[in-house]
Length: 425
Ligand SMILES: Cc1ncc(COP(=O)(O)O)c(C=O)c1O
Image 1 (cartoon, protein in one colour):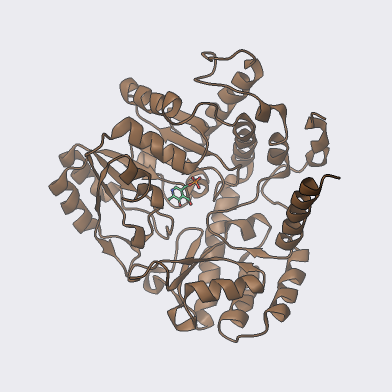
Image 2 (cartoon, protein in one colour; image 1 turned 90 degrees about the horizontal axis):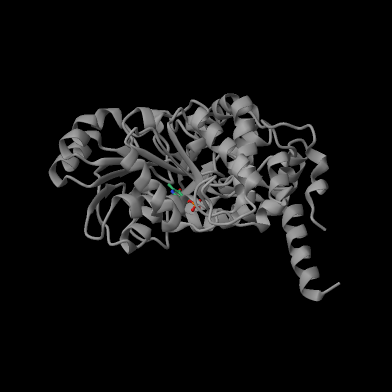
């Protein structure tokens, strides 16, 4: 075999074998179902489709159009909205479409600060800043790990942003959108909610329903709490045709040409599975993160927002300054096959020395874990973080635990082994 091919296949094999022995707890990741994964191998991944279904710039899209129509219909049904666009290739690309549609260079956008958990794409030195957007950050209630609602209302009325942006990457509690309605009205701004992290919770009827609480547009990744392919989506319930046209044109020809049709088909399977299993899955994710937070707290680990129940999402945020800091602890945990990430906390001053670690329960839940397993996970975590046990010893126990949790739950199982039928050669 060609040496480079052998090398790449070998490394991917080793990655698979490693992750099968790990506790995957990155809050922005998930595993796709076997049936959805099949779609990623199909000829859809070799084709181009530009524009909207039935109005394409290429021939050969007969069945692509059929699939896209169905994906759009499923998304509209799940999110109860008039408009769904599944042509975004990632959450960041969806956010760029919002900037292209709704903001000109120099316009003011209010948003959550990076150190308060926002994503880089809404920051000054990310996509927003590169679009020339003038970013003004909300005041933040560190105790509640949420925007300060009164301060935010005052700020919005004062600066009158063109767009008021919400949504975070460390997203523990729902954004009080409904309480800000008057401020939005007075400012006359468009309200955009980046639901990348919590899209599956929204779809599953947990957390909040931003499009029915005041948001004009929602963007998201489709591979975090929504357990689909790495892709993006844009949603709106607006009946303003001009507004929807602006969004559509920002998607194509604005930020995508071809929109990765295999991922779009995989997203369709994910949505179909979500109709069936989504509510149960989303509810279990939230139960698990509350249980994990409590179990970590009981082991002496500082979990943020203790007075407010720690979390209402898939995420648990830890202050590990006293345990060596986020960088050291996440590296130590990785040696024990517990995969997490270091994270800035609101009071951190150095981005290279974050004092936090962020955890997500959505993938452990997808593997079938429930509240009692969260207690075991907390104990494994504490054996590294607090008791400083040798990492090999903890890794062995993590691997043993994983042998019982090695299949994807909350998805259709029939037909899942037949994936080779899609292979072209
Ligand atoms: C709030 C938020 N928005 C956008 C993104 C970007 O998503 P993607 O990685 O799909 O581009 C992320 C990624 O984690 C995120 O947390």
